[in-house]
Length: 152
Picture 1 (cartoon, one colour):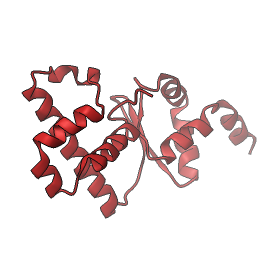
Picture 2: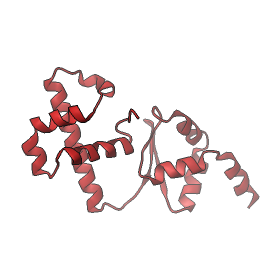
Picture 3: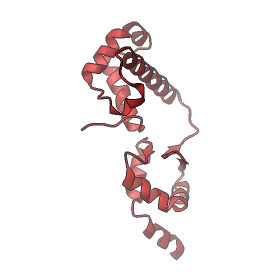
Picture 4: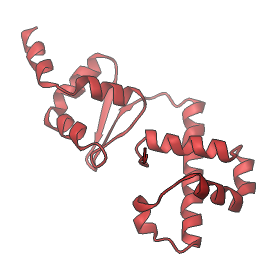
């Protein structure tokens, strides 16, 4: 029991990491360097603690970590499809406007850009049930999952 207590004492970011992952977010080493460093230093211990709590922590060597679930419910599938569609429309729109696709991390994605994307791909987006408000929600999901950053 004391070994577990000692291990927990080393996990100074346990609460923050659990809240982060449990909200459905993906940890990105570039956008959350402090949390990533804590996770990396005690990786095995964090994985063990989360496993004991019933969660499977996955860590990708490219710098991403998340709680993995085997549940592939329709909500997750729909979110994934919508996210893929909105990102495809974004890249298509930006390419047509001579924006460097290699610099996508510099793009400011605001309501004006989302509206322009929607106007250009209206038929496709409406066929998938996405209006401008739904696109905004999908983009918020991209932020939650670590595919984009918020400028708040």
